Amino acid sequence: MAEEKQNLTIQLFSELLAAEHSVRGRLVKALPKGMEISHFSVLNNLAWAKAERTPAQLAETFKVTRGAMTNTLSKLEWAGYIHIRPDWDDARRKLVGISLAGQQARDDAVAAITPMMTQVVEEIGEEQARAALPILQEIRRKLV
Image 1 (cartoon, rainbow, N blue to C red):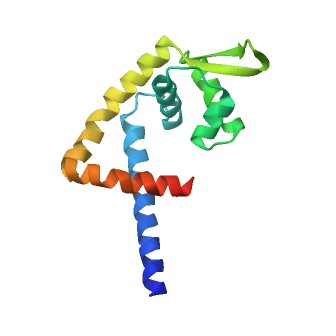
Image 2 (tube, rainbow, N blue to C red; image 1 turned 135 degrees about the vertical axis):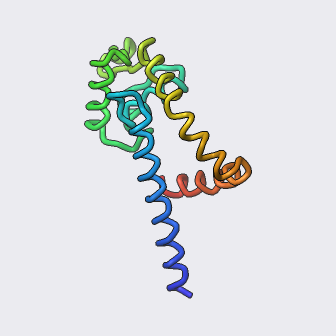
């Protein structure tokens, strides 16, 4: 019985890893030229939040080091997709906000990847996609 449980566990996580690998590969091909998944993720987060966030908050959200987030934010700032400014209440902190160009780049990326994602949902069926969501969300919550 323990071996069966172990095999189930290995199979589940193997499928998750394979799916993640496939999604990343397809996203990279669909995203606008020069945009990386990390760039899109940060822009998408800022667009949804509709508020400025600190680099530390973004690093925590994406479970990356502050150094990795600083690198991503530097590239986004250089591209003109975000604004980084001092926090007027605490000069030691910085605040990150999405620019108009960043909002447009995010919208262009969504338009580029939506057909690919829609095709997958259509192929597996909306009912199965909806049924999979709570399970995937629960797995994600357990891993955080």
